Length: 206
Length: 206
DNA sequence: CACACTTTTTATTCTTGATGAGAAACCGAG
DNA sequence: CTCGGTTTCTCATCAAGAATAAAAAGTGTG
Image 1 (cartoon, rainbow over the protein chains, first blue to last red):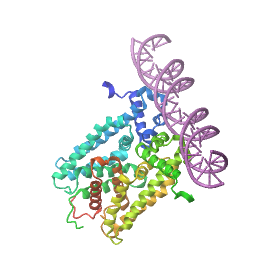
Image 2: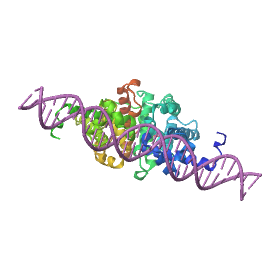
Image 3: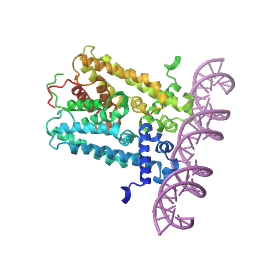
Image 4: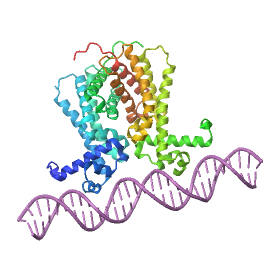
């Protein structure tokens, strides 16, 4: 604990293992993550992993935890840098961008966490539930503010709308391919959809 | 082949097995789908599966194929029932509802297919690529029409916007829980978000 | 250089789950 | 009730992969 900060060789190896786990997890899913693959990616012999983690699950658990934490902190930081008095809807757009950036380029961990959590064995999922809630709470607060400022379509249930929006963002990890389009393009489209989608709609017939 | 239609006992058992496979696939992912679990759900002895399928992969393959096909056909049917001259944006809303209904209540297969395809081994994914394209093509056409009718925000790239929207829909399978809210509520929120999100936005400051 | 500790390797065990082979159970037609 | 085909099960095998043990290789320090 104390020397978690100190950057010894072994600390670096350990980190490489966790990173590798996230990498594999992201592409293969929970059950498909083999220690041998993780080891290969981490440039380590498979049994060496047991020096750092006492079981496969413990390793995966940590990779997911790191991912959830990273997602939350990167979004939080991005929000902290924004002018505090900006309209909530703008802050929401900032969060959208940060979330996408984290998911798509900054961190395999975040993407792995997001995509994998649903497949985890119940016990493990339970352990991350709180982290998940914490993250969603950040968003909930944002949406609530948007509503207070009158920028949320009153016909929308805030909770449901939020989940639909987060879904749109999370799913990008499934299809976005750096080769096929710019990240900025995706971010812009997402921001626009969210902004206009949530906005109070004007006179609508039907 | 010829008597695929005939509903013999064995045909029913076979279907149960495929259904069970979809069920397990949906919750456990590709690698996590064990024949023993499938067998249990299907009320069959594990080795009995080999009477119908020559391998695990073949079974999964079929489950996915059924899912993709079901998704496409249910949406297509819903569209066929709509007045052909309705505005494209309305037809899009119909597709949204049909997609969600299929995913969330009609069929484990569709949900399994949607969620699992990215994890499949390359060879298998290849085999379904066409089916996927066919399905997306239906949506592409809808969006294109929306654009022609001038109801699509010109600042949005149609392809990207479509993926973002489909993501929002597909991800619902991860969180929606019949116990926690009505399906209709989700559908309505999604429709509203899509409608307003895609819509040509009015004077927007910055 | 020799010692005490950390990290990695190699060899081995144990479990789980897919698959194969053949036996048993079922079912409709004589 | 009895036979031939169909359908399903039982038992056995096999491979993959997680986990452990114990030896080996490093690393730093006096």
